[in-house]
Length: 225
Image (cartoon, rainbow, N blue to C red; front, side, top):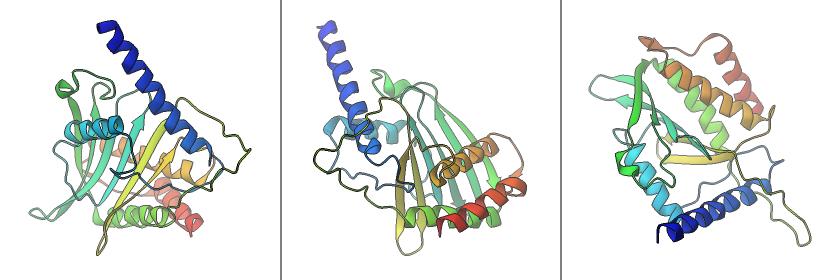
């Protein structure tokens, strides 16, 4: 029975990776975010997995972050960065959380611990980042349909990057990109997200977007117009 369970989990893993790879590879040359699938257009095992991610990785986070940068790798622990507004303190905070183990295919997922980093971030920086995320997410669209006779390159590893922004009057809006090619606008967007993670982990009293990072963000906002 244990052997059969292992075989079943292995097959399911291949199916998940196959679906992720073929979907993104069909539009690998398109330099924009794609829509995030809802509960009605994903498989049951994907829904169960994402539900576990919410329970474990998102523990202690707001349901309405100002922005969210979520990383879902194929072979390393899931992690997420949020910027939240504390109404009581009237301050913004940048929060980074990463699982100590992968949630995917983990029978003891409920026992997985989460490392958490939190520090204040100034309002000017938050506005700049929201402007960037809003520009990128405003361009979310479905990739072109693969025509009959065309073949798609299938990739079996990589990382899904989710970008979310909370816009007044609309609520949360999201887009996703899978391991973008180096030098593209989406690769630059991912790099900025990763730099934010390093700032969140830096233990500064207050994070401020300035210098080269500020310049990179401002230039990317122009590129996205």
